[in-house]
Length: 547
Image (cartoon, rainbow, N blue to C red; front, side):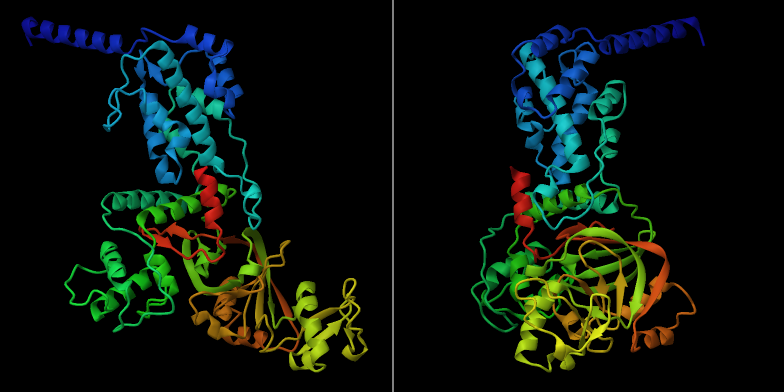
């Protein structure tokens, strides 16, 4: 190659490198102004910040050099943080909690996607820098631990407190030294696919909301509407089935008629939303179809917060997961579902709590040791009315050490002014309230998983019916997969379930049982699932998130 060609190329390269160097040099800073801000009375909103001391210490340590601004406009780190704040809505959080609107006020084009921050006065730059730093600290905290303290809001939340050892100032130092803002935040997310898939589902819901043109006035439905019947709510409910793409638009002569086309679409909707696909518009269907995309986003936000509350859980391990709101139990192995079954959970006044505990043994042909509260409130009054009550229910009275007591010798008024001095238990058998087997994970709440003689109840859509424990469908199959031993054949399990005395079988390992209350989650395909808020826990949490 001739010198005539080489020299111009070299000059262009040198000039290009020079320009790159020039534009990547800090030609101005706010060190003096930031120092004056912290040393004076101009801290402003930081005076009310939970992280005011950490923020000031951070800037003191780096001689008040800014992080989010570079030569008077947003640095690359600042641009990434702004995007992360904007997209915190996909975590079910409020970007306004991280000063998004105030940050936008400093933009020369706040209505466009690609925000520009130019020609700012020094006091504006300081304000912008500190807004973003405070936003960083608050967003990091809320992603890691949740915005709301569950112990102050939900008395049923019995999980251990999440480890809160993360040093957000140290994280910010790493970003200032060149670490990725995005990866730094990713390290704070809950370590579960549920959270990652939930974000995708929420993003899709926002896209759906953007094209929503329907009115979502509440359409009351009392009783049930069957196909072929007329009802004033039908027209609106049909439009909503079309909106959610369970029906294609079609012409109808009578908008109030529940016709066969709508019937087919409704059954698909019910099946997709975990309902009994009977094609009847009952209370659950009406409740679900009355929820707009905005309502669903609120429900999703509440459940993403619950996931942020959870302590560290190894979701790849062998475990049992019960979602109370879904009335379902899943036995998991390496994140795959090896067994699933319907469950019955606590009534509204006997709500099943949410917690985790290790399952360690199974009891075949169990006694039901009736809790004192049930003994006092139900058993004793029944015995006083009917002397044969215990015999009819296959129950017996025992001492605190377990020795049988003649019921006719018991003073049934002895518990009136104090604790009843005996225990009542139901003997093993087909009528035993625990059924033929129970699965034990000792905990402070006297909750366990067990069989039930009332197996017809599993066909009901709403299954909040127990005193708090969890009744499972197909307990023999569940026992077999937990025992994981060829010697425990179907015949041996059935024999163990039909004995006169209970038999305790240790599992040889501890299997974590995680009991959740999730009215929203997204599956592996990213499909959003919503369930009825049977315990009415969502509203209080939503209110706290919006404050």
